[in-house]
Image (tube, rainbow, N blue to C red; front, side, top):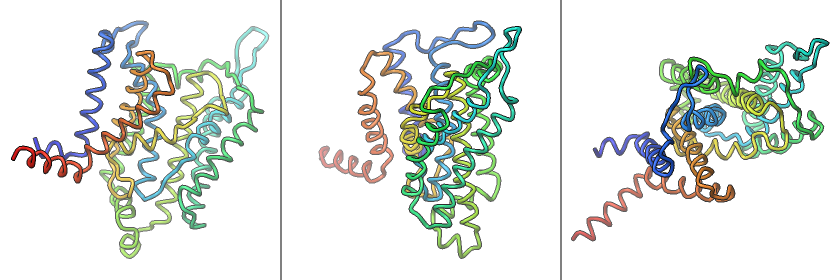
Length: 339
């Protein structure tokens, strides 16, 4: 049991399980699943669907943090990608009343993702080539990116009328949300690359000891640049899911504070903010913890502003439980009181 408790995923998994149990106690039908219209319905499915954008962004954030970086611009990149996609897709009515996309759907999606990846590349260049601190480099795009999105949309909410686009955020495949399949596919691909190829070892070595990695011949600059680019791309995917879900692009609110939730998810999952040690599965669990907690708070009728306080308290508690020093302190205190 002691070895199990020391596993990186133990406390995040226990936290998620406790939240699910607590939610089912407050709402007896919380865990109920029904099959209707060819797919599953239920609170758990809603949580998985709503957590998908956060999972996608958090996976990108995990790799950035693993190389001792940070990206606080992902929320703004989400807004930019959503704005680009909405502007290109739009939707015009033909004489027969049929809605057509202003540009081919694949082109709109590819352009939005390319712009998002370019944003990540920009962050990476500032960190790697200009030598800026990651939080400063990404703060620039965090501020400017939101303004760029507002300029693209003219400060207005851009509504999308093209139905095929809606399947990303509202569609179902084999009974489960399409957004969930996208998040799961991204996790599976990253897990394979990070566990079955040398890239995972390189990322860990860069975060664990950058100087030793450089001496060993690891191309730290190139890998870090690619990691930041991928983080931007992941934010772009999340932006497409978000805009598809609400059938519009809101430059003012899309991705608002998403960077904080992503950092929380990564931290809750057991990834070290000092770099080197990371867990993709833990990040997924962390994102599910945040979304489950949010859904439970809303279902109880608690004011939304309380949500941030509860999140902070939860992160504080989980971080203490994950701290070996804290557990040793509690153990010593328990032995002292016993004697």
